[in-house]
Length: 235
Image (cartoon, rainbow, N blue to C red; front, side, top):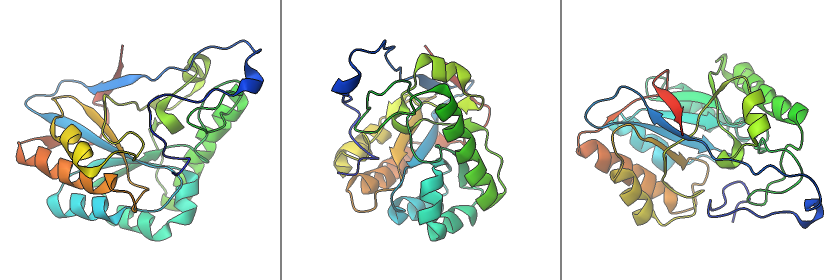
């Protein structure tokens, strides 16, 4: 299983750091504001990995907008995938998922097998370098940042300057779920949900579920929006 897309059912604590003071990371939630009917935001993380054309082509074919959170590492490995996203700016908004997919967590305890940033300087460097990679590759100045794993140390959360992009509906548990499960989760979205799934694992079944679930939700009359200024962190 790719270490960059691990199930979000718990995280592994590194035994070497047990003696250090520790502030548990938090996973903030987010919902859309001021929406009516069935309005949702589909957001897809492009962690280090490949490009899932199944999802991207289905969204273009059916006119379903999505906000794509890309890492600098993904950009460097997927020039053709980035070009596809850039060719459809009405469908895909591009935002920041960090430079190297390093969780903005202080200390040394790993989350889902990923080594954390460790300190605030490393957190800010991960965020800033991710934004720079996107700007250099696309000319886009990003507004939002989403953490690798979706978890933040409280002190790191307060220190990050871009707007924090969380979610209210985790559709694929790090691209680990069967396609049918992912499709059901997305199709069951409620008004105001910010959905997260992954677009960097083309060889896993989850991606087909993302495409199927988005189409099923659209068939129910859902309106899909980019995050823009509609979303806010929720308690």
